[in-house]
Amino acid sequence: MADVDADDGCSLKNPSRRRLRIKPQHEAEKHIRLKTDKAGRGVFALIPFSKGDFVLEYRGKLFPPDSPPVIETYSETEATFLFDFQWKGKSCLDASVEDQSLGRLVNDKHKNPNCKILDGMPHLCLFAIRDIVPGEEVTYNYGDSDWPWRKQV
Ligand SMILES: C[S@@+](CC[C@H](N)C(=O)[O-])C[C@H]1O[C@@H](n2cnc3c(N)ncnc32)[C@H](O)[C@@H]1O
Image (tube, rainbow, N blue to C red; front, side, top):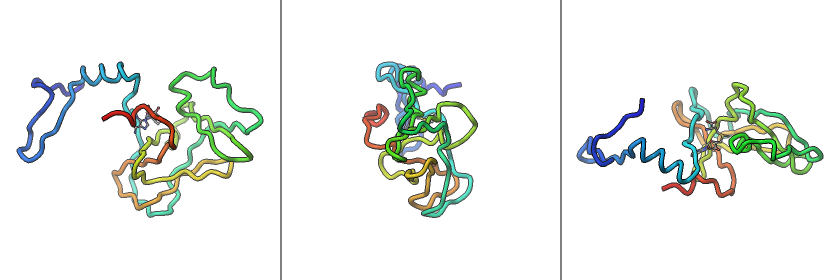
């Protein structure tokens, strides 16, 4: 159940820190207006990782350059799981199927992510680019596209 503030959206819980809480209804209206989703699920470290460690594989169905996926057959949400990368030219990995793997659930962090995806082979693997402590969200930079959530203040 959502936590609803009775005031105008600002709650002063601690005199030294003012936390702005957006009312759930206002937040819903914002996502409707911007046609965006909340981050949804994410992946959080249970164990520490050191810089350079292998963290996860972004698993899915491989589409080599000569047989790319037909983008029109994907919903908008499914299409966000298509990952173009370099292997024998421009290949694509389709992770749109819910298969219980974690790599497909890692969220984008444009600035200061803690992982990087290395390509150049028919598998996409996330490696830590700095130390990661337990409880920290695992993230990588999705690339330079104009992702809608990056526009949000
Ligand atoms: C590959 S999925 C990542 C897993 C996704 N969070 C989920 O629950 O299925 C990509 C989608 O996650 C969401 N997402 C990823 N990074 C985000 C971020 N930094 N802020 C908000 N949404 C994000 C967007 O909806 C995006 O289309």
